[in-house]
Figure (cartoon, rainbow, N blue to C red):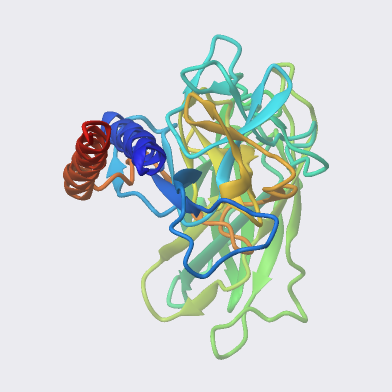
Length: 408
């Protein structure tokens, strides 16, 4: 009789509908991976071995295999949202228990940790006391919201053109008297406390192709020594004569506001020229900056988290790591869009995004479910017909059995 085969078919069709229903229910779940019900036929074993004309005793659910194909990437308004474009999983710490996910919807908790909606902490490489990434082992990422410490100016560089047609000045230099210098320019420099000071540079032509460079700090000459800072000598082609000019000039800045004093600053004019054209400042830079407050952050494709500060600087706050598996289908679903490793999945292969076979991260975006809703609805119709067909098999077998019972 075919009751057993038909009953197994009903159970299989019912389980298939369960899988399809779960896929449809999670069509809008970020990072969800569709599942596929896989079936196998059943045969009864006998002492004499298998027979070539055995009808079989039905079917069974062999596995529910998740399909780790790429989902569509949708842009979001949260800079901490991350989408994985390629292979790999986010590595999450659930009170010390490591889980893996493709759902990249994250936010900061009150302590600065990057967490998901279930309060699982995203792991990666933090920064050490020197500001470098600590790549020893992945740890829960905690973003520091403290002010960025100021950096005192130690290097200055200028690229200018000094007019070779300018007259020679024989008077003693006086920053308050424009007749005692040929040209001037200024820029902001910073002390160890992050205070900005206006440093002016004055250029005095003392002889043919020879220029003295003087400096003042906040309008005073005393805080800047030596005076002059140095002498620029040019060749007949207008380039700096490196045999007669020693660069950079070693300057010393004195402060009275509690900052470190004196402050040594190297002033470099490499690239400066003396041509028969007007004075021009082509570049003027220095390496100091004031303190800054965290105003935002961004995440690059390799997982590096860059903080943006109100002083215009950026600083690395950490790096997201990812994990991949030799057999992702061996992962154990844990709910909440997470999986756990198992003996079948193999050990996690941890690395930086965009390295090896790991995908790239896209900040401010999420990976949608990879459920094809149209295909699932067609599969649902097919599973319904299979269920009806197996029910019809039972009905037919019942009619045959009834006919047999009614024989006289």
